[in-house]
Amino acid sequence: MWFVEYRELIKILTISDLKVKYQSSVLGFAWSMLNPLLMMLILYLVFSNVFRATEDQFALYLLIGVISWRFFANGTTSAINVIVKNSSLVTKIFIPREVLVLSTILSALISSLLEFLVLIPLLILLGAGLSPYILFFLIIHGIYFLIVYGISLILAALYVYYRDLDQIWNVVMQMGFFLSPVVYPLSTVPTKYIDYYMLNPITGIIQMYRNVLLYHQLPQAGDIAFALAAGFSIVIIGSYVFKRFERGFAEEI
Image (cartoon, rainbow, N blue to C red; front, side, top):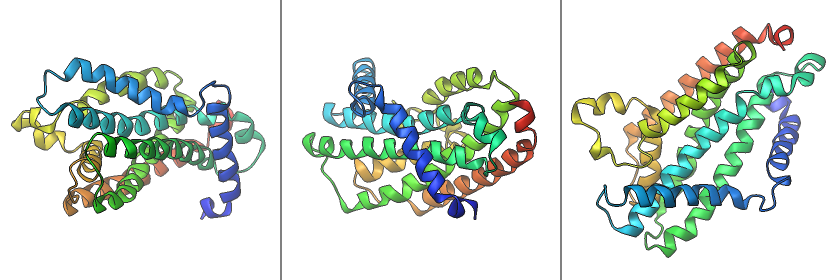
C-alpha cells in the first residue's frame, strides 16, 4: 500500500505541518487549548440559562463538543488547498498525491489528541472523573479520523478545479456547527426530525465522546458500527473522487 511505502515522507510532511502551524506563534500549542476554552466560555455565557444542567457538567459538555468539532473543522479546512499549496510536489515529483492530504489530516489528528489530553485534568478538577470506558476514546477517534480524511480527499480534489470551494466550505462549517450537537443536547431536536438528524455521523461521534468522557457510559455497538461503516464508506467515496480528478491536477495547478 502507498501509505506504507511512503511512510517516511508522510512522517516528514506531518512534522513539517505541525512546525509551520506553531513556530510563528508566541504561545505555540497553547493556542490550541486557549481557542476551545475561549469558545466554550462564550458559548457557556450564551447558553447556560437555556439548557438546564449543573454548571461544571455543562462547561465540560460544551468543551468536549467544541474540541470534537475542531478536529473536523481544522482538518478539512487545512486539507482543502493542500494540493494547490504544494504544487511543486505535484508537478515535479512523482508521489501519490493522497500523501499530501493524509499528512495534513495526521497533523490535525495529533493536535486534536493533545487537546483531548489537556481535557483530562479538567474532567478530574470539575468532578466528572475518569472511568475505564475512556479506553474507547481511541476507537472513536480512529473512526472520526476516517470520516475527516475521506471528506478531505473530496475537498482537496475539487478545490484544484473550483477555487471558490473554500468560501463555500466556510459557510458549510458554520451551518454544520449548529447542525451537530456541539452546544445543545439531542433532547432539543424535534422527535420528527431525530432519525434524519442521526444520519449525520458526526452527531454519533460527538455523543460517543461525551458518553465515555463525561457520562461514563459504554458506547452502543450499533452506534460504533454505524460510524465505522460511515467512515469506511466516506474514505472509499473520497478515494474514488480523488483518483477521478487527480489526472488533471498538474494541468489545473
